[in-house]
Amino acid sequence: MPDVAVWTTDDVRFLSLEEITAAGADLTMEELLGATDAAWHDIRKGAAFGGKSVLSLPEQSFWETESVAPFRRQFESERLGWKLSCLYSVNDRYGGVKVIGANAFNRNLGLPRSTSTILLLEKRTLRLLSVLDGTLLSARRTGSYATTVMGEFTRETDRLSVFLFGTGPIARSIIQCLDFRFRDRIEEIVIRGRSNEGVDRILEELADHVAVPLRPVYDNTALSSCRFVITATNARQPLFEDRELDPHALTLHLGGDEAPAPYLQRVLRTGLVVCDDVGTVSRRNSQSIALHFSRQGLSLEQIGRLVGIRELSSPGSWDAAKDHPTCVTCVGLPMLDLYVAQASYEKYIRCTEVTRQQAHGSGSA
Image (cartoon, rainbow, N blue to C red; front, side):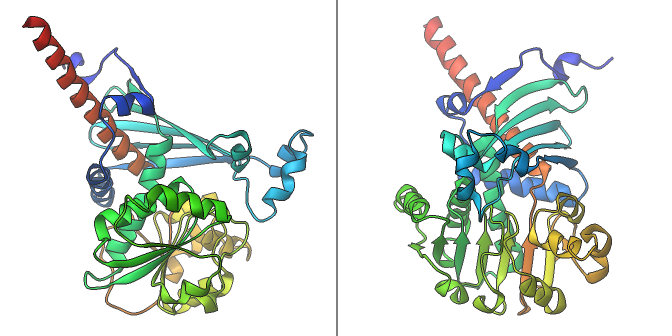
């Protein structure tokens, strides 16, 4: 008979961001990227796996509410992204479920665009161990995609500039992750946002905390001089034209319909197209590469492999030395959330155990 006490506990911990911070259990950048690196390693060897379900709500029904209708003009070029999502995964020790509620309108209420809650479970019994505030953890794990993609698709000797569309929490995490891992290889990060206020805010928050130079811009003039272009927005239409890019640019798409059809056609014809998971990107059908096929009555999932689209989650190597355009689209794998939540939970347990022992020692003295 197995020792049930080893596997599970009745002491479910509800960990808010404030409680994690108070315990000194915030993940350092090294710990965050260590967790996501471990996730990618286990994903590629089949030791961690999961799935994702998304319920997208019709925007028209949202705007039918009289009290919000006057705000509609704010979103002429931006998707609400009104959706309820569930991401679930397991590894060798834990199971995890992340529930996300999102609506870009939330900023008018002084609320985050999306709010995430992560349930961490013991794998064998699948009993609940902890409920974590996953909003910041989710943004940080998404930002880590930038380091993964730069590490996989550029050479160690490359020095380059980065053009970043977006100024939200994910953009902030992208800058912090790139600065930590690749500050010696990045000449500057050029930032363009939906509003000047957003650009000013992210510069004020980060300028004194990162080593990589940050440069605000208000048009795409600098795009052609940047070899790595990252889009992290809720855009309804493409953010750039193909002719504005460096011909061999590496692009990473983390948001909505951000890349133009001529660019996608060129990369499909002459370069490399990659998704973190083709099936999930296809079923979500909200990002440019999936929409490129669905608008033609085709399915990315059915045709992707036939036209050479590859997966970041599959084992293999990339020819980073070859000069060609590369387009990477990432929808967000649930296993990354699991590993980041696991690292946060385990650090919290370590920190609180040390505090408990110190308090016990002081009491005994």
